[in-house]
Length: 135
Figure 1: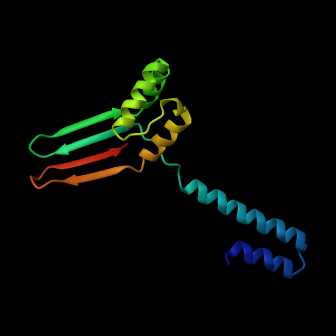
Figure 2 (figure 1 turned 90 degrees about the horizontal axis):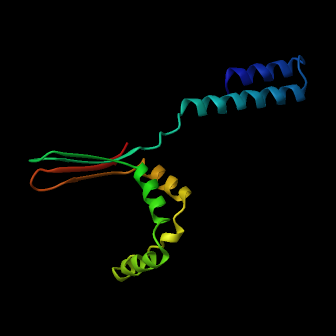
Figure 3 (figure 1 turned 90 degrees about the vertical axis):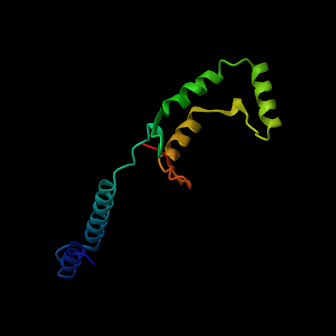
């Protein structure tokens, strides 16, 4: 029990405050702790880039703006229905089920948010190191 709660209970025991006042004060103390906790943990920043870094004989550093996902989604709205059906059937023939008509802006936001946790590290036998991540 923290000092603030003890002080409130002591005032209640001494008759300085009523039970109702003590409940309100205890609730206020708990609420302020919740606010402090949320302030102490800043929200994770939304990633802006997909990065691919290869270190070895040839060093490669690629940074792709995730904003391109939005542009790609807008592009799909320009594709005629007949072409969409042909693309989808070709993808299905290759074992990929993908419905271009179901792409929504909210889905892209979720994908970009999930990319914030993406990190792939690969070391090969020749000493090359490949790292894929978002920042």
